[in-house]
Length: 221
Ligand code: DC
Image 1 (cartoon, rainbow, N blue to C red):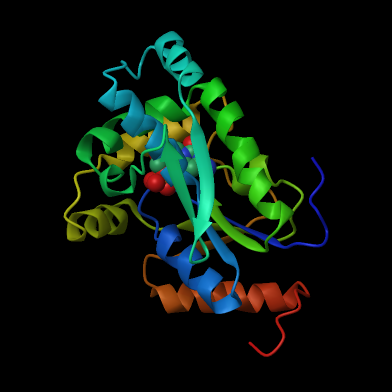
Image 2 (cartoon, rainbow, N blue to C red):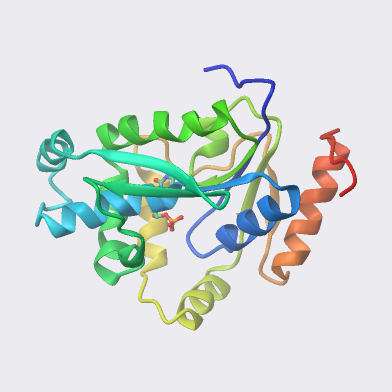
């Protein structure tokens, strides 16, 4: 797949609770780019599977569910939106059942084959900041702008706890990094940032500096 040179894609990958969502959103606002949260897409499919009582450890049943699943990805106020069979699942995407099952769903190659083209479509009309696990390694491997945001396991657990969310991030990271289909890896040419002791603004500042260094035209910003 060739990246459309008329639009810019900034890939932000990293493990659970590394702070990448806050960073990606803040960066997109600063640049006036569109912010795309691909984790929300895997979460939306997971929510649907849980709702339909499909066992997420049984790929055949997950694949059968996909045949009756109509996904529409869009944009609202410069951020990605999603509906599943006409329903917006956004309020439910951080539920414990979704956290518990989402990594299983993300291992199913057919799920990825369904979602990745929808992710790539955003680039046709927009400059984007896209966050996930495989954006720099599999979705847009040709982009020169790749970042991997990390943080210590302790800091990440603390961040989730502060959000009041139940999320077994260590278990999720293990599944995400060891699955066969597009696992979470640090792309060879990604710039790695440890956000353990940095604020969101600090991480965005570092990314900004790097983008300038790489020659991305940033205008008046
Ligand atoms: O970023 P997040 O925690 O909302 O992502 C939820 C899960 O979705 C994550 O545990 C793995 C999966 N995911 C993925 O496999 N590929 C992506 N590009 C984004 C998320």
